[in-house]
Amino acid sequence: GVTPTADAQKYEWDIRPQAKVRAIFTEGGFVETTEGLPGSGGAVVGLVLDSSPFYSEAGGQVCDVGRFSDASGSTPLLDVRAVQVFGGFVVHNGLLPSGSSSIRVGDMLTCEVDYEHRRKVAPNHTMTHTLNWALREVLGEGADQRGSLVNAERLRFDFAADAVSVEQLARVEALVQEVIAAKVPVSVRETSLAVAKSIAGLRAVAGEAYPDPVRVVTVGAGTIDELLAAPGEAKWKMQSVEFCGGTHIKDSSEAGAFVILEEKAIAKGIRRIIGATGPAAAEALAEGDRLAGALAALEVAKEASEAEVLELSKALDAADISAVLKADCRDRMDTLRKKLKKSQKGADKAVLTEANASLQKAAKVAVRRGDKHIVLLLVDVDPKVLMQVIGGAPKDLAALILSPADDGTVHCVAAVPAELSGDGKGADGWVRASLAPLGGTGGGKPERAQGSARGATADVALAEAAASAYFAPARA
View 1 (cartoon, rainbow, N blue to C red):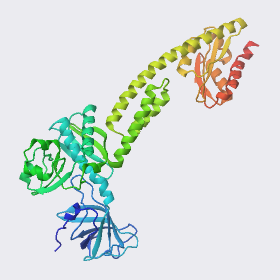
View 2 (cartoon, rainbow, N blue to C red; view 1 turned 120 degrees about the vertical axis):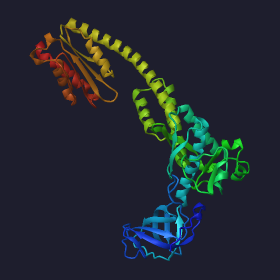
View 3 (tube, rainbow, N blue to C red; view 1 turned 90 degrees about the vertical axis):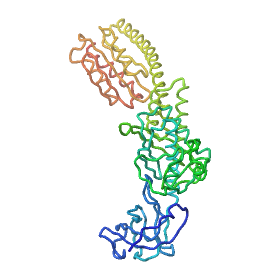
View 4 (cartoon, rainbow, N blue to C red; view 1 turned 180 degrees about the vertical axis):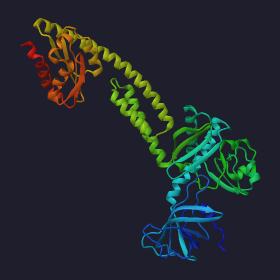
């Protein structure tokens, strides 16, 4: 003889009503009392009450959480983790706290909804409605809802569309932000389904069965009473109007901020937007401003390094910021990379010219002295450029180049003509012998090789000495 749960209080805020326990459900079935069930979070219990202020999971919105205490409100009895409705019966599922008193059918309990949790969920739900309206404004009537999920952290909205450009997404995001800034009321009222369906601009989920009467929620300057008084007015299309049984804020400004964090395709003709409101959105917007500022600084810098660009690119990819801003920053990063690459090519060309000149000068000195090998030190030259330089070494001389870099690495390249690689002394062995004092190594072929030693720039003179000594026996 248990009657369905009266749950009209789920739309009220900051109340602590009492309710009577009508049924207790456990893994073993229905029981009359929780006495004897394990505590310490070991027993999962479902309570059905005669009334409830808890919002049940429905319509894409997560349920309320909270707890039940005894009639005095002083002793916690159940941590409510999930609330679901089955055939009109609201089941509050949770864990028995360690050492808690027993709960019996017929007991009066104090219901304590975690309204701070709800205050994080409600703005996401209300702005999901506004997002739905904004998508229609930008993409047209075909951008129909295909699903949604709102929780305390974010909102998710699925809709029909083949593609959304960055410009369209920017407009959608801006429209929602404009509604928040306008501080318009959020009006709610139950009315007959037939009358509600006649409201201009109403957004309903295709194929969804709605109750009669139905709950209507609108976000805009026009209140529900005004909409129902003149349902055919075209101006109602300028605000969000939906059927909804969820919990909402009372004024759009309560959302604080809004940001689209991600937009992507999830199936053919179906796309998904992930968004956020409140502090999460404010943090995303602030982080976006910070990264955009860092990018702007690199864009005007005279000598932006490849490492700085790479570091910012990684930070941008990992950041939870506006998807619109991220797309813009990525485009700007691509432009910056091209500029850097072009600049680097010019710098490399200049370095290559200077390095080749140094090599040729050293070769002339070696010829005058009757030497058959060259050991050259070039500071902070890219390994790729070093390989180009060594490729231009005189064909009758063995050449080895050492280049200490800013990061502490000593790079080494060598080339040895076949006629000078007797006794097994090729370029590969020369590189290894030169880097050995630095703890480095290398490899390659007798004709050409390369290698490196990390954290060794302070001892590069040891490598120079080892390189010069490599062919010393041959000169004796």
